[in-house]
Length: 330
Image (tube, rainbow, N blue to C red):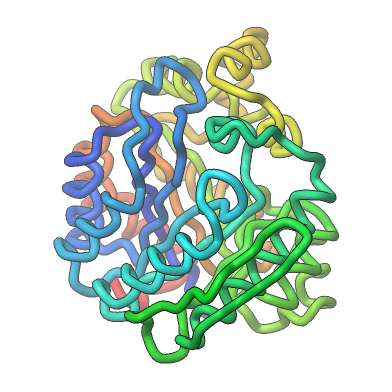
């Protein structure tokens, strides 16, 4: 079995843009294998306090890093961004990073997409739109002129003038059988936030056999476990609402209301907190058992990132690699 690839999350919902770039550079220095970046217009909760434009941040990340691959986790190409704009951004970023960029895609959340005033259609309509967007992206990545007439999108004589040979690798976020079928047919990798074995099985059945599977695990390192639990509860208590709920809520106020009865103990049971790598080891095991090849850690709290990255280099990454295999690129 290949070693588990260990990633680091630059999470714009909790961190200002300059710090995101610094943290990305530091994560490469300490030995993480890959980076993922959220692509939000809003934070989940007001207490998180940030949400800069991910693509500007990633352009800077491409310049301050040298070896580490990175991806959006994830971009919605349906509402806030038209597919032709996503194609141009992704192609440019792939060139700036010398091919280190993967375009992670998903069908979006109301939280971020309602801002352009187009409403929030049901999931089956979003999947129809997503398939059209994938068709447009694939055509534009060929570097030719593209005209497209669809049920949801029109493209008029579009062309990417700067596009890498072979296009841009795609990851697709999944949560159920329908999205796994789309990913298996169109993606170079599967993306999921939950370590459910059936997601990989459905992905394989649709053509995904042998392709990478990328997950994410929120963690809250801190020397004082009680304070770490308190921070995780303040900033991440929405995490346990499940993806179907998270995709539908329209803003931070709704997330605050939906998570108002979540207790610190509930958060501590779902998220590894404190100074012991053992909790993170246990948190990663379900992903490994479910066949995930990559898992990105998401440290909760902007002010704790320096300490977390130092701890990663000194203690966490050695412990995880002893458990799950030696690093490939770290």
